[in-house]
Amino acid sequence: MKTKEDFIALCEQNFKEEFSKIQKEEVNRYLKGKTKYYLEFIVLSLVIAFFIYYIYSNGLSIYYKIAFIVLSCIFIVGLIIVNYRLMKKEKRKVCYLLNALIYDQIVYYLTNDDYVYHNDVEISKDDFNKMNLFNLNYLKYSGNNLTVANYNDKKFVMCDVFLYDLISRIKNDSYYSKASNTIYNIYYHYKDRVDIFKGLYYETTINRDNDKYIYMIPNNLNDKFVRKNIYHYISFTGVKIELENIDFSERYSVFSVDEIKSRYVLSLTLMEKINQLDKMIKNKKYFVFKSDGRVGIFIDGFQIDKLLFREFDLKKKVTNEYLLKFYRDVKKIFDIAGLLEDINTYK
Image (cartoon, rainbow, N blue to C red; front, side, top):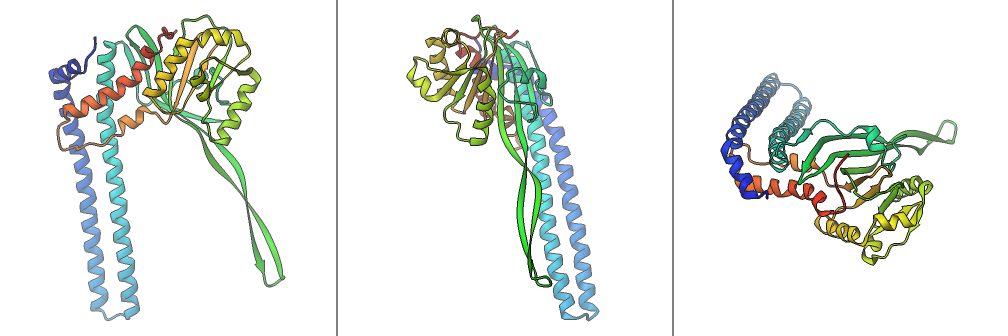
């Protein structure tokens, strides 16, 4: 039985020491970059101060003096903002790298080293598209944090996924020409990005015989654009199925070509487990039960990246409290497979 106490004990043995070395190296690199930005700012400020002194000592017009001072102030403020953003970005990079090491250690502990993790790789587009929930023929697809793991004899794959569409739009504008006494209309063509899905994709297999696609779409899908595209895409694969669990039916619409098979796969036990999953992770979810036994769970707004981009005090050693919080959040993702007892192993 894996416990958080055993995880902390494991970290105390070897991980914390190795982590501190890497943290020290990355923090030193970060501080060197910070010092460089500060020196550049000081040098540029001295150069500007010299020019201000030169202008005043040469008796130029007061208008030139005011203009130069105003421009200098704008430049200095802009430089401060740019440097602040650059340093914040660098800090996020360091936190991401260090948090990825913690995530990797947690996965190692939970799976007894039976896992594969790549923070810059996603599940292949072809494998993702086999779920047939989102039409990738026109959607843009990207992802990261691919994790394939064996946890409590249940194997699964998950990764962060980002889907969006570029919609062509036309903006109408007009202007009046005095010369010809005519109003002219101008049409601008531009691309507008519409986010379809940004969250966690979680895939395993079900231990029930299933040869049909079954879709579960949340009823609280308020985005009309997303709703229209999903419903249009799955309407070719079946009709809406009414199930017995009232609480479940209030939150999900189920579509399939085979009502009997749908009731067999979505047993009362499995529906109750999904209800429990919704209480554990409240984010909006889509489920696809595929004909080859695979089941895909799309959890909107729930990402591994959100864990990895957490910021902490880089000058201090990582605390047990921080590691425990990280551990609980990762374990909650892993427990999805354990919660759904009808789900078996990933093929």
